[in-house]
Image 1: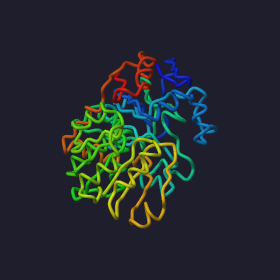
Image 2: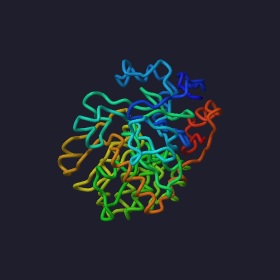
Image 3: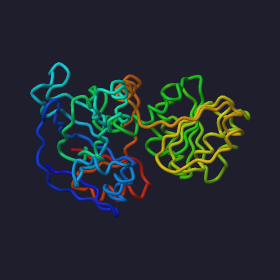
Length: 351
């Protein structure tokens, strides 16, 4: 089979790999869609070995040539002899939860496999991922995909859109709330889209005018170009000086994080989602004195991924609209060069 690896220095390679064979408790997924995530750009630019070392995972890599892609979605092509066919069988449409753990610790048992006490494997990072024709995973990492959601939509739920849903759950958001979304890339747009479907008034903030304009089609009621105005001042103006009740930061820059905090009202709730960087706050003025709650939201649980797919189906959320580029695996070099420019939206490999 074919598989794509990140080589670093903005290079990828599509190489040949042995076809996987299912073992005990495992399934082989014939890939139908494999999404490109912003996190993949770290591996694209720095290389997988360097990135694994930064994550403290260097000694847990499945091989020196790990296939990338952690937003996999497809159809079960084969299962191990011990797999209960009442749960998963050949032909089932599935999303891959891109972590696998011990299955026994409290975190694994509650669906938070990425927090496994005995170290989780991350598909597309430390174990072979979805930028390939086939992928081998334990059936415990699979979630059924209903016919109401496309394979592209399932790939989005596998990380980016699922991460957005997880952040909204962390904030316990409802239609009573108002929400500021900082950073209108794929995760930010998903956050806006899902929140709007929940009946939330959404404020969208970005420094890219094209992204700001595009966000209006994803449920953003108040689109704010932070390259032209101070977003905190603008949000206070639009809310009668109170601020929003919630904020989600998806930009990954320090200024956006502090703005996300300061744009919320008293008792405001803020979730930090973007990876990397720091945040500087006046603890008394920005947090304690306003009774604000600041949380870090690390992707989502397996249970939340299943809920997210159902929510999208039941509410008719047009998650496929997140994708602006579709590619074949043999176009991987061109696809990631385009994605690295970060001028478009989300890309996906279709098989």
